[in-house]
Length: 593
Image (cartoon, rainbow, N blue to C red; front, side):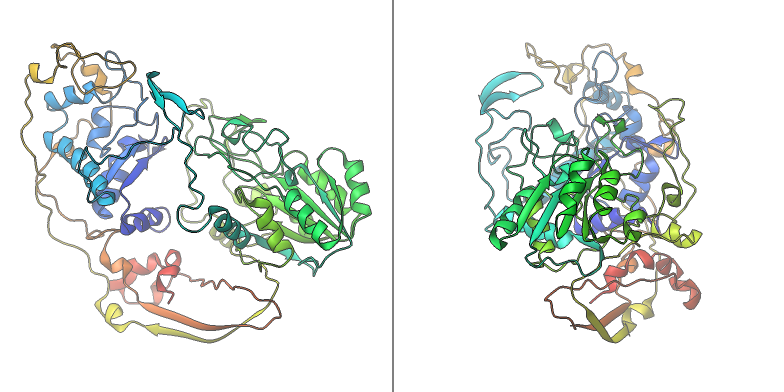
């Protein structure tokens, strides 16, 4: 947990993030949204997180358990038991009135939520300064319900505000730049960059537009046309999408290049005929992934394997069989098995373009033609086979809605796993070629004696007791809705439904619910690993500064991405700083100048 998985959260907390979402899965047998160890102990105590923890939609399972374990905000739609049909709302009010959830814990929830609110809106005067909402995530129409769940109060919900230039930098220009600089050149036998070829073949469905438009498939849940975004509830509508074929056609027309294109993955005869007559054949292939409430061709969110979709592998092999200058372009969310392409003599270049967004084609053309020197580095390892990766998908789970898997690999994931097992990869983590060459010289490692001399010091002392802001009126009458208040279904309200206070079943069950320390609001000892935002301040001290002189020794202007690889140095340093150097391999960016 500490060497591998906790660091992104430590980074976020240190940067001042206001909220963290608890997920759907269980951790060590406890649901993430009622897991006291990950939320209270690690996040809020050890990392010093001052914001609020919110549930993912449908991830909250209990009333008291989630409250005691550190969850602060519930997302709507988590259906609980009758009569509230929600785990919080009136059910949480009952739990507080019965003493099952301490008043200080309720205050803590509110303070954390409002502290985060004022952190990003320090001058807001609630409620008079609330900005008007000018768009709806639930409708593309101008007029619709202000509150879609209730389907009432119709008004203008979408003003279609153009924000493409709101920051002063056109979004499209920035997206194009990011897309080009993210391309990873995996292989290149002097085919790239292109220099006004006489003829060019563009082959594969992934190079072309979706005939029905870039937003034709709801939440991008299809594989028609070029792939520029994953699928699921986190997607956005494309204002436009420049396909690779569109951008390459424009370049070909400007250069006087004869261009032929094949938009089908399945007509291998046509693909081979087009490729055979071209100086260079660009063949496109994809693999898709997204959120698992959507299933595409048997893939429920995650991919079932590491092959290319829609016959992509067969298409690549067919094109390479007839063209000695075959360039493979991949749009995938992660690694695929391409060892055959690496070793194929006719495949002279391979590019991984990821999921580049609306300027996809322009970004790619900038790299293919050398306007932008490739500088991306692979963020994962490309194995030669599915088995190279160790842990496999389990298709034999008795209850697919409640799977259980033990991850016994420890810290040995991705490149660590490959190194630990002595497995040769097709392309290593961090791999990426360039059109130019760079010379490194004058490497220096400077010790920050002030920091190194202090060493790692555990925190000591205690917190203050949990504060309580005012007293809760625990009378039933004070917690009933105002007389005549019109409830709107399916909204969740904080009031009791009756004067009976008999809905104890609505609290649910949790492994922490009966622990007396979960309700203990007295002063608590500070954790030795804590003491600041992001954890112990000693973890963030700069111990070394590494510098190097880098010179472009080639003929192409370009950017170099230096990479510092570090191995555990525990045996080389005094015991006082051993805890810090256990984590050093994941913190190399912190000691760069």
